[in-house]
Each structure stands twice: as structure tokens, then as C-alpha cells.
Image (cartoon, rainbow over all chains, first blue to last red; front, side, top):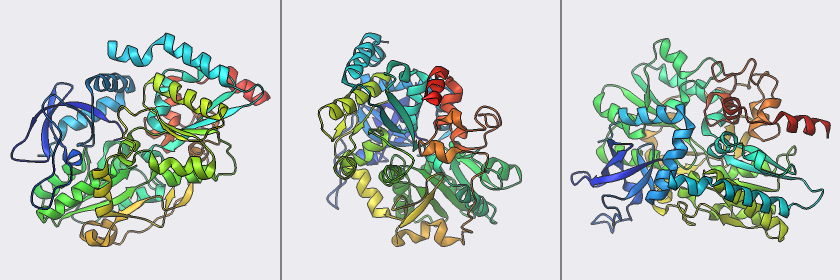
Length: 99
Length: 375
């Protein structure tokens, strides 16, 4: 639960403004990116500074921060070193469907 | 891999180690606490203490939310799970954590409907799918996971889902730091501040640690060189007579944190007057609960929660480990009665717990232990 997993944004989902399709270790999953969106003005949603190719750090299905590719790769290496806790988390993520 | 080499370069590690040693005042001993379980993991996996001078001790803090959950809250959650028509959902990390009368896994084996989820949004999906059931999410975690729970409650409210509730156990990191600073059996010289929590809360909330308690704190990344750099920054502050909050992990942690996440938490939740922590006791202002406006999603308002209080097992010294008062291997059941396969205490259950990290990597230096025992 505490592990931040890096993922690469594949596409923003037009029919779900707060969801993005993200590749995590080659597996595509929907991730909620609402916490990266600026507040709206009450009429329109705020700006989301995110495009395909960006990397994000994902916690329990939500993107908490944007990171660069170098940090993403380093985080993946660190996670791989964590062992079972990371593979359990990846399995849980693979089973998750938040759409 | 070139990315990782940059964070693990042995020559840089040696240079940092030399610089840290040069900053040690002769005859003085230093103790720094790393608050986050992820940092503890890096320290033992890479044997970082072996790169530090004898004068520096790293003390492991309470930054593993599974480890600090009191047994009574597990029993309360199991009591909720055993109510008719309830589906309890929880992160996988919690499934084996023992309460006074067993764990979620034990209760599931006895017939309770307890399901593992990756995200609170998975719980919400289960609620949509089972409108005839009440789905409860066992919400746990520091500020890293709190905004996710808050966002899920907002989504449930927006969709008008009336069979989803949260059993809120979210905790706050700064009151725990205060409790440690006020603990009589521990003298610290500074803190390696948490990484992921700080992506949400930023660095400002730590300023009181430097200003009011006179202890420097450096927010740190998770790579071995991040932690060595943070210790260097702490030592440099002490040598120069400074006491500040510094951000070693600025490549991920903005100084102001994630304002949107903070706003969402504030909209849905409020600070509890007090909350019980395993090993640390009752700590004022240390946890969150749902605001009255969201009472319809609060399992503690919907159900009568027993409020079970359970003393920790007498054999287990998790409390002292969590306060940093003893090292894991100094616990009388470490590695004998208490192992990752048969855990007695939470620090051995969670892979981020200090005891599991020690057990899995076996990095503690027995010569150091011996030397400490003789000093």
C-alpha cells in the first residue's frame, strides 16, 4: 500500500476526465489522475498538465505526482529490490479495475 | 542500468561516507531516525550502516501504517465484517495483521466476507456491483493514501452510492514525530524525513521540528545515495550550528506538497482529538475521521463499533521498536518465536516493518551490537 509505483501515461480517457490509461511494467491499467488536476472554476474542470508519455507515481490507484523518466526507472529498480511486497502489489494492481 | 548507477554509484557513496566521517566531532555520538519504513528497507538491504562511522546510529521510526495499527482496531474491523450483509475490503498488507482475536484472514476463513483490494476505488466498484450489501473499506495509511480515500468518498457521494462506507484509520505523520520527540527514552539528533508522505504534505509541516524542538530534518528519497546524502546534510547542519528543514528529494517532493490532495482531504476529513498507536499509545491530533457532512459514508457512524482495547502481547516488544528505543534484534522473541512466517508483532508482519527488514536482510552487524553492549 505504501509503495509508489511508476507508470507511463498511454492516453487520457475522454469519457472519464479523471482517468488515464497507464502502462505499469507493460500492463495497461486505468489510474485516477484527479489529484494532479488544478481546481476548476465551478463551471469547467481545472487544467490537467498531463500528456501521453509522461510518467506518474501511483499510490493505490491514484497518481500523486508527476516524475521524470529517470526517476521512474530508478523507482522501478528500487521496487524490484523490495521483492515479494512489490510483486504482491503488482498482482493486486493487475486485478484492480477502477473504471 | 545507467539510471540506477547514478543513485548507487559506489565511488559517490565512499565520498559521502568520507565527508560524513569528517563532520563527526570527536567523542560525540549521533542518532538519526528514519521515519519511513521504505527508508528502513533501503538501509538494511544495502547495509548502509556499514558505510557510516561508528559514532552514527540510525534509529527506525514508526512510519509503517500497518505496524502502528492497534490490535483493538483490527478487532473492531472484524466485528464490522461479521455483521450481516457486510463486505469488508482491505489492502493486502492488512490481511495477516493480528488483532486480539485473530486477523482478517482468520475471520475470512470462519466465513466473514473480507476481500483484498488494491484501491479504495475497487471497494466502490464492489459496492456498485452489490447494492444489497454494505461495503466497508478499511482505510489505513499515512497522508500518502489519505487523499485516495477522500477522493473515493467524494466519488461515492457524487454518484449517490449509499452502500459504501469507510472505517477510517488514516494517521498523520507529524504528531507521531512529536510523540517521539517527547519520548523520555530516546535522544535523537535529527530526522530523515519521509518521501512519499511529503509528496502530499510537502515540507512546511516539519518546520516546527526544527524551530520548536531544535532538530534538523531532511526529506529523503529511497535510493541508497539519497539516504547517505540526507545524513550528510543532517551532519552538515549540526556542524554548522544550523537547524532547518531541507528537501533532498526535491525531484519528487514539491515544498508545498500536493495542494489538490490536501484540499480534498480537508473537504472530506477532520483531525481526531486523539488516536491510539501501537507502541506509542494515545497521540493527540494524530489521525483523521470523516466530517459530519460525510457521515453517511462513515462506518463508525453507521454501525456501533465496539471500541475494543487490547494490550499488546507481553512477549512482543514492537512498541519499543516503533519508538526506536530498541533495535529489532534486541526484542526477546525476534527471529525465534517471531518470524515473518509466524509473526507475533506487526513489525514482523509488514514487509516495511523494521523487524521484517532486519530478518530478511540479516544486515545487522553483530560486532556493533557487541560493542554497544559493552559500552
